[in-house]
Amino acid sequence: MKIRKAVIPAAGLGTRFLPLSKSVPKELLPLLDKPIIQYAVEDAVACGIELVIIVTSREKMAIENYFSRNMALEHILEQKGKGILSDKLRHISEMADFRFVSQKEMLGLGHAVLSTKEMVGDEPFAVILPDDIFQQREQVLQRMIEISEQYQGSVVALKTVDSSETERWGVAKVNRITGSRYKIEDLVEKPHPSVAPSNLAVMGRYVLMPEIFSALEATSPGWGGEIQLTDGLKSLLKRQGVYGYQIEGEYYDTGTIQGWIQTTVELAMKHPEYSPALRERLSLFKGDLPQI
Image 1: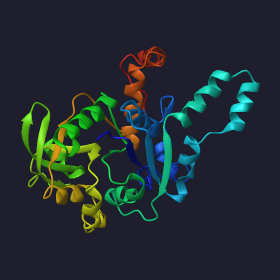
Image 2 (image 1 turned 45 degrees about the horizontal axis):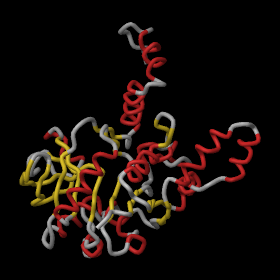
Image 3 (image 1 turned 180 degrees about the horizontal axis):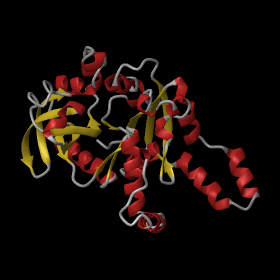
Image 4 (image 1 turned 90 degrees about the vertical axis):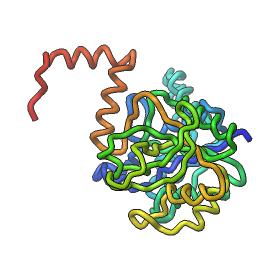
């Protein structure tokens, strides 16, 4: 079945970015010339997804405003002879059919996904965490969709991490099928390195079968007192196959201030428009960075 819908959870409090995130959703922080969350939307659209469901909260209406058309602003830009910019703004709202769900309580990623049950319905769908950006961009999700269609099961993105860092992610116990494809045998949320089943961590891309909703409804709060998507998938394993796709290339984590800065610099260094000026500026230091 064709994957037509994607869920983008964006209701979190963004505490790592306080005090900025008190009034500005961290998902709208700029990453070069567009906000972080737009990368997630573009990846979904590039894979043929038509309906993008964004999970927000009442404090994050700015996200809904960003993806909604502002005809008054477009008209002003056109009057000022800035039609290209007006078209660019219109394109944002026309990339997909956008729907918004308010997560009334911050009860975890699993709860955020569960809140979209009525909109998703009885069909497979994608989940994209906007904090996670991959060098391969939409190719990651496209490969996962292909695996899901082949095996008729849910698929998670996997990446090898340092064994000492397993407490940051959900970690998978796997059997390799072939190449970068795995059958998931078990999942553990943020395990201590001494008990981690592997060093393959679950990253922010999922293709989920609709049965995940009933699994999440039966899932009790786990790590951090929240309903974890990892625990829901662990329960789903008992009923149907869950698979993994090991990503290649760079992985960027924009969920922390340090990660956001590093991602901005790395992407700017690779961008044809921004790279020359940035490299010229950095060359002035001649190996000596400014003192803090």
